[in-house]
Image (cartoon, rainbow, N blue to C red; front, top):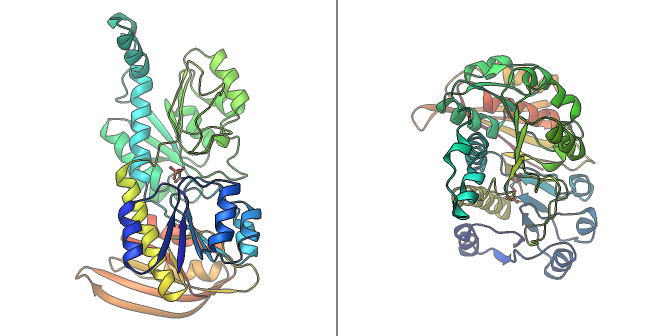
Length: 405
Ligand SMILES: O=C(O)C(=O)COP(=O)(O)O
C-alpha cells in the first residue's frame, strides 16, 4: 500500500510505516497544484494531511485514493462531500492534540492578563517600566466560559481550574449532567455564557452553525473587559465586527491562533488587520505544534493506516464521512467499567440503526469490560453523536466507531 504524507509528521510514525512494508512518500512542501500532481503521479491509496487543503478537484482527479487522514482535529480543509461521493473515507485524530491546544490557551490567558508581549518588547528595547504593568488583574477567582466541551474544551477546564478560575460552558452534544460531573457550570446557550464570563474560549469546529459566531451581537452581551480566545478556526470570528469592537471598547482584548485567510504553513507573508492590531495577541496556528501532540497524532494515524492496510476497513476514533450510496455496516466498540448497555442500544435504535449482534467480553485487562455492537446505519452523523456522547459518559473508558464495509 502507498501512503502520501503531505504535511509535517512524526518521523517515528513514518519509520514504523516503512518497517511494516508500506510505501511512504513524505513531502511536507506539497500544496495546491503540486499536491494534485503528486496524487496523480504517485497514485497513493492513503493521503495524510494536517491543514493543507484537499479540494474536490484533487479528489476527483485522484482515482487511486481510498482514505484521507486528517492528522489533527478540524476537517474543514478537506472536501468531505467530494470524498464521500468518490467513496473515499475521511477520518481525523480526535483528542490527540487537545492537551497542546489547552496549554496554548493558558499561555494566551496569562499573556493577556500580564501583558507579556509588551513586557518582552520593552525589555528588548532596553527599557525598564515596571509601573506600566501594575494594573494587571490576575485570573484567580474569575470566570472562564468554554464554548465547546469536547476533548479540547475539557482539557482547558482542567487547566483553568488549577489556576483557580471558575469554569462554565456550553455544548449541544454534552449534557448538563456530564458537564457538572466535570465540575463545569452548564448553560444551554452561548449567550448565557457570554453574560457571565470574564474570559471566553472557543473550542468548536468550523461549521455553518459556528461561522461568524464571534460577532457584534455576541460581544454586546459580553462583559466590558472580556477577553476572547480563539484557537479553533479563523472563520468563527466576524473579523470586521471584531475590529470595530476592539476600537470601541478599551477593556476588550482578543487572543487567537487562527485567522480568516490564514496562509498555508509553507508561506510566510501575513499582513492582516486583526493579527497586527495592538489589542490582539496572536500566534501562528501553533495549537497542535508540540512534539508531544505530533507523536500522539502520528501514532493514531499509524494505527489507522496499519489497520487499513491489513483489512481495508477504517477503524477510526472519528470516521468523518461515509459512502453515500448504500447503508453502511459499523461496529461501536466500548470499553467500560461494567455498566449496562441499555442506554446505548436505545440511542442506536432511536437514530435508525439496525443492531445485528452484540458481543460482550468481560474483564479485559482485569478491570474493564468491552462490548462490540454490530449494526447497519445510514445516519452517520447521528451515530457519531452517540459515540461522542459515550466518550463523555462516566464509567466509559473509550468508545469508537469502526466502518465495516
Ligand atoms: O488539528 C487541528 O484542527 C488544527 O487546527 C491543527 O492544525 P495543524 O495540524 O497544526 O495544521
